[in-house]
Image (cartoon, rainbow, N blue to C red; front, side):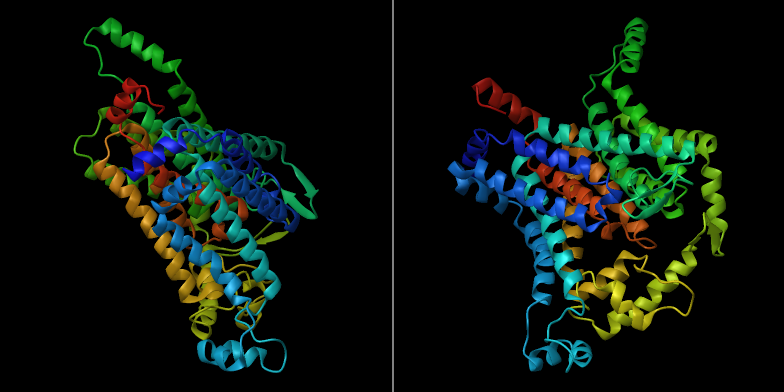
Length: 487
């Protein structure tokens, strides 16, 4: 009964502008070097807070309904919220005895030098805390504003279009061999990078957008009617498909795959195709009855994208780079092999061992790694392993909160594939599972979760699967429309 009241109240909320503001922020985030500059982070933080305030202002006449809606997602909110609160706890001044009890190594470092707190780099922890709250705010905004199938479909399509814009930009700059200074950074487009500086971050963004696009494609295939027996009708259906939005979406996905392959990111490509196979197999196993069109799409993605598109645009170069193990010199800079990056992650485990519970402070890796650095020229500003860096910065407490959020989201997606029959929820679940699995794999050798644009986009995609869980089925929607109620 309470849920019915909430749905009725939410139908009267006028928050269309807030929804499109969220879409605009997601589209903007990758352009200024992945929002990986302080001023770009400030825009992200301020915009997210504006959206959150605007969302609650839109619900001001029905705040109990807003909190009732959020209560339905209390477990992911608690887990993500715990991870967001942690950096601010790390900044609190503590008595020396308390700090010595919970983190003896932190106490030893700070004794007689500065005020006692859990973070060894308060400025970076403040910045990390502000960004984390921005992601959390957008997660709440997505839960509040994306309430029906139309908006969920629109948000997914806008993410695909954002990925398409980055792919086209990246391919054009790569084709032109662009080399320039932007925001005090030298950018060399020796491979597809889009609006990013680092090709692996572009690959991570493509993985997310491609996953959402594939899920959307599956959702739209699931809306097809049963085929007609007459060959003439079949021919008409073929031409209708060629001219349909489904075909346009498929063409967009091909462009995104080309861009992903041309990033020549070894783990980016491996993570994407592995995630597609893993989630595809899981979907087939969990589905009591899989439409032939769905199986055909998954098979075509593997065959066409890997064999044909990859051969044309350079998948063999990705494979060649996988075989390389030495450090290479490219464009005047150093490009570390996977093995060397794993070595950096291995050395950073010393941080986890010395600061196991609360870490050294969110965002503090750059400065705290000095003590544990590898004996080599140059310096790693990140661990090139999200697991090691998150554990070092946030301790086991942070890993538990964030891991719980990810596991709950994966379980939500699997439950949708197991229980739901509506095409859009299943497609969004497929896309979210694929995006998360792809970055779980990619994060073993890179730091996509440290980049604001990629982290923000992934958090909103994870919100989408929770929204999809509570979408009414087609039969419920049709009954409600017959009664004259808003969908």
